Length: 453
Image (tube, rainbow, N blue to C red; front, side, top):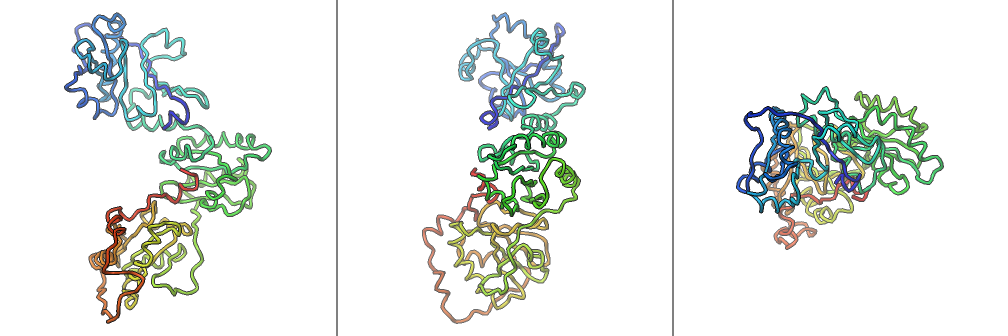
């Protein structure tokens, strides 16, 4: 939650308006019977809890009516609740004074909302109404939405602007706030530094102009390279040479490390960031070495061979993406090996493969990312389509899935031998039942584990 990370952000709409006498009201009347049905579906709604005898409420009324008329054009409803008639409803919502204004919006868990109609308050705050202002406890302290653009403000622009201004210009990233950046949808630029190094703060400050230039396009952070050394390796920074710089496309799980043989300064990084923003930097793909021999029951796939093997149009391809430490993957291994043994005689038609996703990156050519283990994908021959395997992990179910989705004739002449002793094919253990519908995912995100989420 942003409130816990950066203290509270006060989202204030400051306006001064006057209503025409006798005009029909655009303010919605809410009661216990319609409150939930009106408020819950609304992207944004402002509700006034009032009492008819309240002097402040009476003074607010014409301004509230005018605001309702203006915001109605933006499909933002303004409503009111009479707390004399609806006392239980007001009590439920913690109303203890009048008027009480509450904003219900998809950002309500991240921001505190308020409205100001007093011109003296606006003047004291050095704000010219109508205005939209975010107050915060970091960087410049507050942001004002451009007045000229207020008339064209819609939900999408408001959402984008709020995300931008609520993100620190250049903050430290750790397990506590990583998700905030991950959910932003923007690339994340890391400055890996040794926090004990002399001049660390001064170095980080030199990157602030660059971070300001790309604000809203790329988020900049610094990170403790000593504490999160494993995360640096995940970002394809192979040397413990600090400071170092890398940009991560979190959505696509792609990494763009700056050459560690060069000095990491704001001046040297600026052209690199521009090239990245222009789409001219190729991602760095981690890959294990190509095996000298394929002597396992299944094909050991590495990134360097991904396109060659997976996109072989003559073959159906069934791939398990696993992590060596994953318990589910360990339990699946003997079954997966047996599956490979079953189709060993027709390797010219089907490939049963596995790829260690902690040592190999999925290349950009693949239309998916690996977010959990095991992830199992089937690519029919002659296509670029990947089908998720979401069944249970029994050998019978895997075979049935292959037969149902393969383009090639994968009929196998069964040998009259006993099944592999490594897998009791006929017996389904309680463990198999337990994992029958977990969608084949071990919910531990490979990219996030190293920042201790």
